[in-house]
Image (cartoon, rainbow, N blue to C red):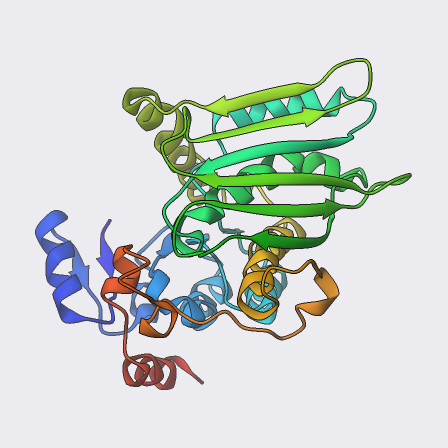
Length: 314
């Protein structure tokens, strides 16, 4: 890391204490011409991601946008469109998506003559901060199948007493040339494995795999995998995922949230999302001290977000 821009000065000081020689710039665009790639990473300001990413995408600088990419579909699409217009590599991803488990299950799914459905689980705290990992784990495994017409999301429901804590169950309906199929994502804590998925096929067999839960395996098989993918994108200027795939991932994340926040857990179709926007992590979304994730403990004020938006807007 050579350059950084932050909303709060204390974060700049923390970064400088961790990265020797780090230069703090006064405006994000001041980095252009000095960096080979950029991370947009501040979940407390996710509504501003399109504005933060825009100058880099326009300058052709490969850009990684941390989860969950955007608060409404329109803001995600805005980043995808700018990247496409300027031929810039753009990626948003979970640490789960480039694990050995995903590659193995994608290959097995490709050999399956039919997909009947699936069950999956993901270890999480709250849905906003970490439930997403399980959602995007499923998408990563089905990514090739979606291209073949057997996997695009049609709708979802989120059954839970409180999305701010584990336990809960997300139900997905997927498109298929001859029949819709359904999948379930159990959002748990303390399970034997970070994530798991079993795909049900016909009489020729099923496919299953998981991300191990042991710390050593976690570090080398999970964190390092995504870091290498991002590094390759920065070096080659090519994204491993298309804009359509990024938008499908965002849809899969937002639908269950819309279900639980607006429809009391009822099944909702993707067409219902419209221009609905997920709030930033803030006290508005907290209850009884939950979620406990740091994004909710140190949120930006509305005034801070508006000041940054004013600075970044043309």
